[in-house]
Length: 70
Image (tube, rainbow, N blue to C red; front, side):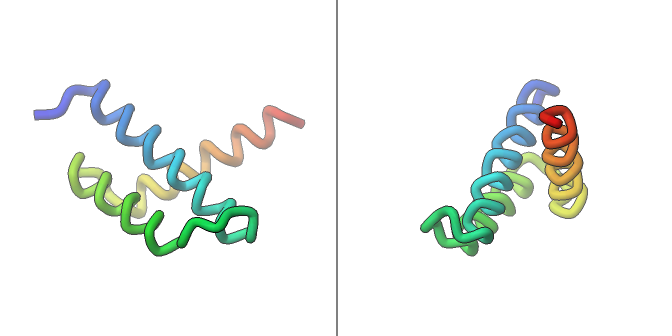
């Protein structure tokens, strides 16, 4: 059984992986994107998170952070 805090931490970990993936896809990181995608998928599976919903949450969080910086 996972607590709300566990789920929040899992989503934040996914967000960190999402940021690394975006950096890698932009050519700013040498990390293999497939490894990052696998890590993202594993965390979602472990905590029962829907992969697509979590990815969309990461995109929204990233866009919100970008807009706050402007």
